[in-house]
Length: 173
Image (cartoon, rainbow, N blue to C red):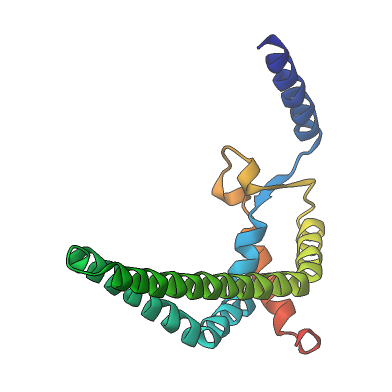
């Protein structure tokens, strides 16, 4: 317990020393800045449109599985072992298809998000650097690492604005 307290005091001391030397400290939520851009919003609208058939198939499978479960609960007492086995096999196949499709949809969404972030990251760095230089900022801290900050010290919206401009520039497309 004492060693934990000593470590925390040391970390706070180092962090305090860094902040004490920085006179203009701001916060930013880089994820929110990226996801709030027109480019990100359009990317996810397109993804949702592209994935509509898969989402509809998932919903259909969910309904079919519920129907099988309901049928089994209602009729299991009067069903033969063969009928029960067939129903269980049918449910297993639907569940396997559901799980595979759900994983494919999730992987596609992750891939699109990763591709978007890779495309935007250099522009994010440039936007942050431009804002930092223009405002003579000494330190930018990720908002999730801050307990409290005045809203006036949050540059997330400025980053989003710069990213929108950068992504709409002819060379970005």
